[in-house]
Image 1: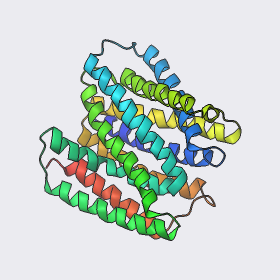
Image 2: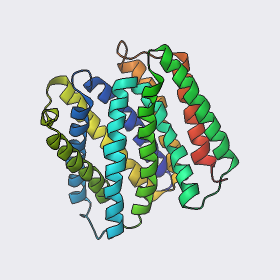
Image 3: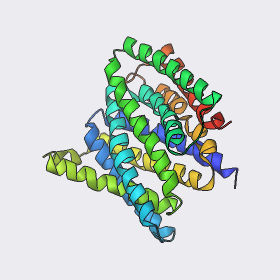
Image 4: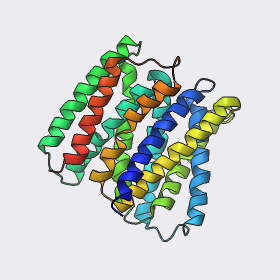
Length: 289
């Protein structure tokens, strides 16, 4: 069983990277609200089918249900929507790299809320992430990205960092499959209500290649989230998180393969991305030592 946890985490990272590429392609024809809504519909359908084939909801505790609902609002509505907007605004590679600020947020919350201690690897990892973010920002500016726009992926990563703690606690009272289903369905209901109330119902319409790309992104994105939850249920955060931090590397490779002529890369963007990956691994793999 220990060997399957790293495999699940790495597969989750690859699927998350693939979703980023699909989203970038879909955004060529439609806006982020459309892509995000389709993403949630696909996720909800797939996960509830999975619930039916894996024994149903079980007997979740009220606390666990509440935590996964909250995770859906913070991580899926806020975090994932900001990620869609960031991909459209600053590009797939830069967004993918900044997603690795997530373990910094998670570690900080664990120190504040769970009584964990600050260690040398956490301090070094933080400095490396800051250095990588600075280099990434410089590389982005040379490609025409405004520094203020970098707040979009940073805020998205912050939401995901908060949710990592919520999900880990929630798994003590609810299975990973129904937990993921509740998470995504909460987001779908909340975001659909927002679109209807704000008079933006047309955002729920899509066709052509963008629809295909958004559907593919929905499958890969939500399968990635499910695999992370499954990996956390079988292993520890310190094993799972460092491997999921490989996502930006996969994004860069896939961008070079599939986004030629759509998205530009330079040495600073690649170097900054790699530094953020290294810093995230230091925090998640060695932070407790």
